[in-house]
Image (cartoon, rainbow, N blue to C red; front, side, top):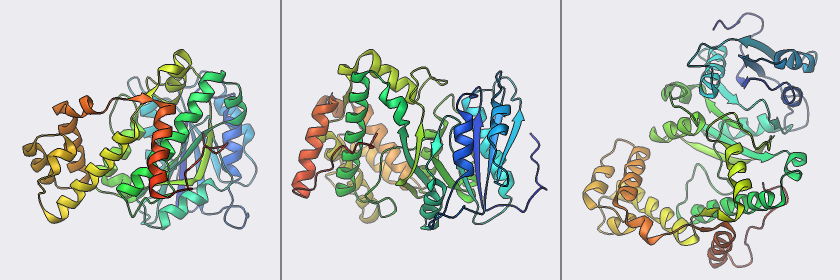
Length: 371
């Protein structure tokens, strides 16, 4: 796919947005991306946005062009991806490759992506930049549902959604207490998806770009970063609001999760507080063993064979070592016998109880916008 390079000086930040059959929502995304501001509220400079419209059968491209404000760095490019690549993974890869090409060899280059049905907050891009400039190789921002669409969800679905969001945030806080990460401290969140993601050009090239997977390419990309021990920051300050539709475009994603809750909201189970704490402590123990050597308590922490954990410690990176240890844990089967999933409301209460033991009176509550 040819990428025009001559119309402006190369930017330091490129936002690439794949879009297909999003005529009803693309206008809001374009206007929000064009209206990004900096710390003082002045229009943000040094970035550009590319809306990559691929294989659409509606007027997504025309609607995107109509929404373009004069003088702002947003452009629309249409293309036809070939069979086999005309899917969500192929579209994301094409968009990020376009961004990488626009950045050239900029040592400070930052690739950013969101979705065509998402509306970033006015300071979204500035917040992502702040985190990257603080030393992160990749930054994952917070993804919330559009308030008007969330309000239209059936009551049981909305309730489970809010409970799950509050639980995930509380679980992250407990994990940060038990297994601190200096590059991703609290406050942080639990999401790492393409609707709100930035990574340095260097990191993107180091991991070889978007992985060739059937779906969840954003999750696979973050896994690749972690395998290389690259620093991933999950900042709660960079926010986008996305669609709450129940019918999705991918086999696995937010829409499928909402549909699952719609079908059986009472059936939703998650790890309880004991499992959250045990996972955090197991990972902390493996990190310590990589620094100081084998510890006899590791098999008990991981409920996995010592031989496999010793092999995990020999992995070239911590990320690969953790991946191997988790595979050993799940393969042994003892973990699943000890820790059974519990209803999300119970898990939330348990995790908050654990947090109260760390800091009485400072238990994270479900913020009205936490979802």
